[in-house]
Every structure is written in structure tokens, then in C-alpha cells.
Image 1 (cartoon, rainbow, N blue to C red):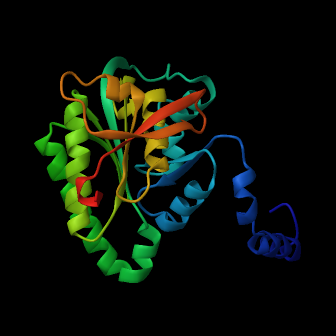
Image 2: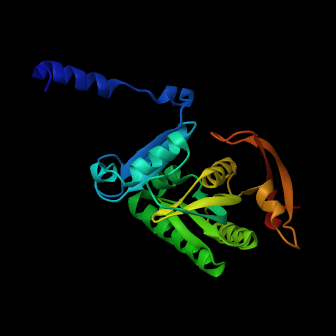
Length: 258
């Protein structure tokens, strides 16, 4: 509206021809990508690809329109406040100690291409059923589900680990691999979910796991009373956006040992 139709067409054509994908890895600032759950013009697979290729990004799917979500008291402003200030003063919250499990289906984009839309929907429904069955068995609370990812909390770290192992083993029988990360600490319990550094740490740990792997932090390992899970050191790693180095451990997989 600020120029002639010819100028507007040239501007649009220039934007459509611009390809910034090679430069995503150079973005050092944390990024929040917001997408409406329904009615978006941008496919979820494309948004997920963008989040996966930015060094420090996370996806938020909101109900309703983006304009409503950005209003005072809405989820977008709360996320932005936490991103910038590390707090959420706009939303009442209580602090609780929780074990956090983050799961992610490996190779979802390739599976979508291989199976097609209908096959992918069936696989996704089956995968979600596997995760939710395990959560119910081990008293886990499903906090958020975005595509093939799950965020869940547990009162006991032992239950969180047993849940992760069941998800790994059952998913393998279905021919898919899941990466999982476990961490524990204080979280802010909000009306629409949880927030805080503990959640981000669990997500970062999950992102470092390989196909079929369960990685956990030293923190959650130290919380086990009695029987300690069979683990092997997975090195000291930097978690994007979080200070210091983190000692990680890999849960032993009996089916992959000689």
C-alpha cells in the first residue's frame, strides 16, 4: 500500500526468491517460533524444519489466532517475557520439583515423505498411543504435545525413566526410533503448562540424543534412591542457551549389547 502495484510486485518477487536457509546456523540469538494450531498457511513440517535448523529455537503452537495469543495475558507475551527476563510475572505460578521427560520421533520428515499424508497420520496416532499408554502406566502427566514431540512430568524420577524405556522398546517394535531426554528440578506450574530452565534443559538433552537413545543429566541420576539405573557416561556437553557444561549419561540398552 506504500507503493505502486509494480513496486509491490517487485518487492514480493524479491522476497520469494530470497533463500536464507544457509545462514540459519549463524543465528546466535534465541528464537521463539509461534504458529496457530489450526488454519495456518505455513505447513507444520516447514515450521518444524526451521526450528530444527536454528541453533536455539523452540516452537509454540497456540489456539485461535496469533493476534489473540499476543494480547496481554496471552501465551505469546508470557513466552517473550520468559525469553527476555527469565520470569513470568503476568501469569500466576507455583514452583514444584518435577522430573521432566521430552520425547521426539526421529526422522519424522523422512517418514512423512516415505509414508505419505495418510500413512504418516496413522503412524503418528499409533506413536501417540504408545507414549500415552506409558505415561498412564508410570503416573506421568502429559503437559504438551506438538506433532510427534511430548513434554511430560513425573513426581518420581524412577517412573520417568521406566516410562522412557517402555516408549523406546515399544516404538522399536513398530519400526520407529525415539530420542528422549530426562532432567529434574524446579519448574513454574502455570495454568497452561510449565516453564523454567529445567524444561529447557530437558529439551536440549533430548535434542542431543541419538535414534533410540535415552540421555539423562547428572542431576536426575543423583535423585535415585536405592537402585541406580544402568547407565554409561555420555560426556560433558554444552546445552544451547544454558550456562556451563552438563554431565550426561546414556541409559544402557540391553537389546543393543553384545
